[in-house]
Length: 466
Image 1 (cartoon, helix red, strand yellow):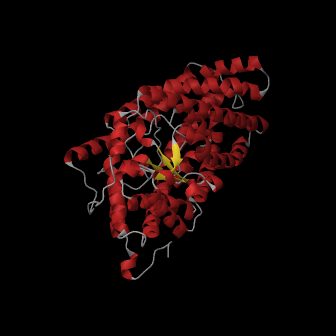
Image 2: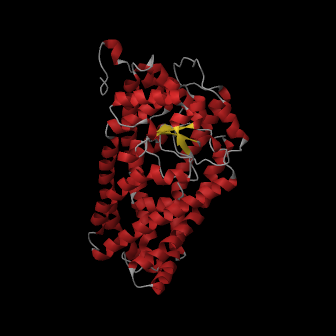
Image 3: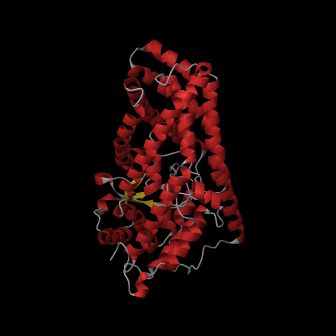
């Protein structure tokens, strides 16, 4: 995720935690490298030039009529080495990008960018809203530019491994759009944050915590309707693949959900990425099923239905609301710790940095440093919560497709195998990597579970789908 947008979302840390927990798609980013990423997890790769030869090659592929039997996650020797190397890169990149983000904030503090922007803002107006209108874009653009090397490194690595086929011009345009979204979001959040800080210096963390959840819920609602179409091409799935639409309808009906064919969409991801995905974004009236064109090209209909069944499980099992509740508690602790420590930080270094007090707009980078550190330390807890929900969604996918497709366990294993092969999922993930960063169970574990979960052979029923 681009650093300017990430800065805004750090003030609304529940958003990131919630997306990780329920499998919702994030606001589009220029870089999609994530630890342990599979298409059943948080990721986003924007589409671009439809004339790309690589994209054409992807779309010419057809779904395999007779998938091979899967007994474990296996890869050919060369692909195995490639996936292993990419997994190691992800592990290193997560640490490096975290510390590089802190370095960017240190640069802003050390060289007094924030106080300069504050001074300019105060010359424009004495009102907080107008000051933030000047300060926020300057601050977030500075973060974006200083953080660009990390984004470029991730993008170049994706191209080297064949996961991205996006050209530089298209990538930079998507990066720019992401910054613009980040500036709009950042303006709103910074304005609210400093309004409550100035109104209640002792309880600002509590009041900002209270308003964070409605904003997060609103962003989940509008993302598939407003934000995603800015980065992706969507068309009715019924026009692209009527048979797949009918199969998804049966799965949705069995799940007891209401997603009619009019809210099932095809997405043109193959113009920019070779990866696969199918997901269920939004809440309420914005809820929909989205299937990437790459997925349709490389997977069978039963496999796609299983992937969609997994995503449907997040809704049926109330993972959205559980994720919101978890994020609500996470935010409470995060903001409280920031409140308890920001005074000490500013007392020790505030004068050297040109920061007057926590009420000063120039204190924002110091707050972000604290939120970043506390969020990173608590990251394994969020990851564990997410892996639990994703495991439940895997189980739900197996249950909701049982009886709809022959041997749903084998179909689920096949789907994970295809996802792993295409996305180069790590065949031997580092346990420390899994503990700290994996928002989903590792692909080898997911395949093992799919092959062994079979209550029906014992005369029992599924836990959630009877």
